[in-house]
Image (cartoon, rainbow over all chains, first blue to last red; front, side, top):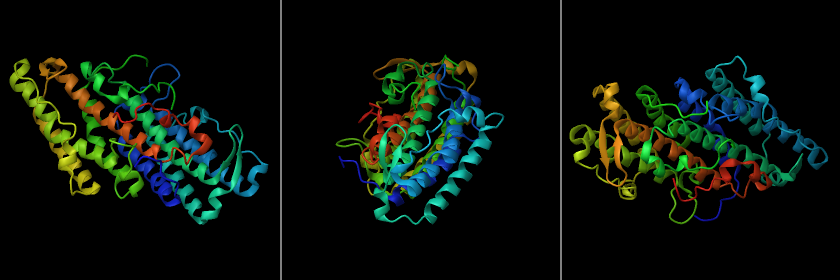
Length: 184
Length: 184
């Protein structure tokens, strides 16, 4: 299969609904090296990444969907605060953030399903504060790929901790070649 | 934390023991688009990746550890067949491969723990067929980072399916910028 497949609401929901359990399996109870080590100055560790996903559930995806449905192109989405988690995660444990992410994601997907979106709704348009016109299906596809971008980042951040420990094998390990340092 | 942290057996085992449940949460029962779509000609889909991890449990990591412990530098490891899964996965479902991976990983980690490796064992040396001298701790660190390299690949392969669907948001999604196409 060479061309990217088209958006489908059920497929997107299947992915979105699996992310909390995936992160839970990977991170709950894990030693500090995997939970709290980053890729160097001003980069994120696993704790920061889960906090960022929690913030997205609260302030980004569903609020933007509502603005799109209620106001169309007439009102731009609020900008997403990519650093909200540094305040909101303060004093919490990684396990609390994982619980919070699981609960909020479940609530958001329940709300999404009660909207009972129809195929023709997928092309409804809204306005992104810097990207301009976007469609409802692009917003939902981005929500799903945003999960994957952070799973991708997380595996890279964790692998970074053993960058030296693997010795000569580093040349065979694709995750150590990824140029994404400091980017999600 | 700017410098990669040193290898620790308990940390490596914590990571290795979590990978089967992580893949299970991400992939079990998922729609075909996430399980069977790849990044184009001769690249791997999720089914291929899990099959490759199963093959590693059977023929790579623990067999190499045994060769290292029994023969040191005098006998090189057998080369790892990176395409074994295309034969061995034939006729199986993704769910069967996930079950198999979980069972084999658990058996291998039980065996690893019964070896009761001591800190001084970590620097024992073996011979890789093409990389030359490697240590026991490098082998175990590579086993863990190999899991992460394929989780990194998997998130990229899945994201690729929505490369067009996200529209203008693609510029913000790091996983879509990763140059790893066709490499793990």
